[in-house]
Image 1 (cartoon, rainbow, N blue to C red):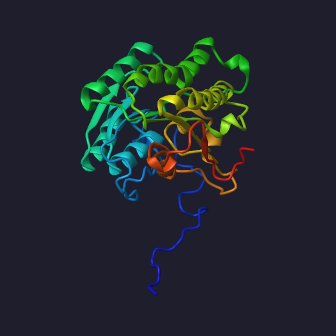
Image 2: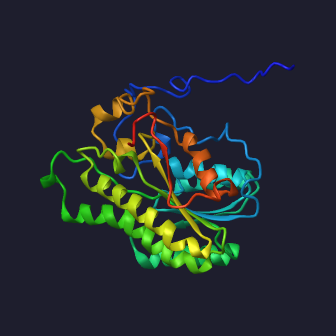
Image 3: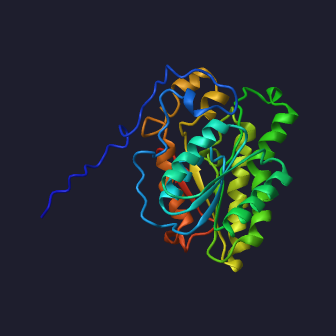
Amino acid sequence: MKEDKKKMQDPQEKEVQPPFDDQEPQDVPGTEKKMQPKVDHGEESYKGSGKLEGKNAIITGGDSGIGRAVAIAFAREGANILISYLNEDEDAEETAKWVRKAGKKAVLVPGDVSDEEHCKSIVQKAVEEFGQIDILVNNAAFQMARENIQDISSNEWDRTFKTNIYSMFYLIKAAEPHMKPGSTIINTTSINAYKPHPQLLAYAATKGAIQNFTANLGQMLASKGIRANCVAPGPIWTPLIPATMPQDQVETFGKDTPLGRPGQPAELAAPFVLLASEGSSYMTGSTVQVTGGRPTI
């Protein structure tokens, strides 16, 4: 019997661990090139096996972080990708490079998903470029850490809800007529839907809304053969963290999880691929938790 030379890895030591003393604050929404330590999106590790061959996907927030990891994985599984992003052109081009390197089509669409007309234009662009939409990943998000409710302006509250939850409604409503039976919708919720962080009042509220929205949506769309599910990440090392959180929390980010570190976007790729593929054909209205051991019950 051949010895298995691929060793199992201790999940506590697989990726970098805090403290992250070298990470400097960033402006919202943050950029990948300023991240210290660098973010792992699976550029060198994710191996595809044709699970999404011939599929076409829209990924919002696809320029960096979790969105980039999902774009790389989907492309290596055989999907063409429309990358929706706010204004981070350099990051978006880097994601597109990896998609094209996998031999798949990458379409870049900058703009604000909190605007309904822009969401309609994203869907229209995907239809023009791909012919149909098979996978919609609603991943774009905005957050700001605030000590008390008086620090949250009405504009910031509106921006958080419009970016995180309104955009899902806008995009799904626009995309659904172009999605055939077997198509899938994947929404990014958060551990904050279960255990809200006291400094993330607006963000956590939207993530709870996404959880409920998706559970209901899975039932609503089931008769059309369209599935809708969530991924709930725990603390994940992305540009949004140093751009929106106090420096002391950035330095110890993820240390309080049972695994003692934050997750890397690459560690979210497989759950997204599962929910986009036939491997999850009996899952709808469900949530896959990727939390580093933080309980969701």
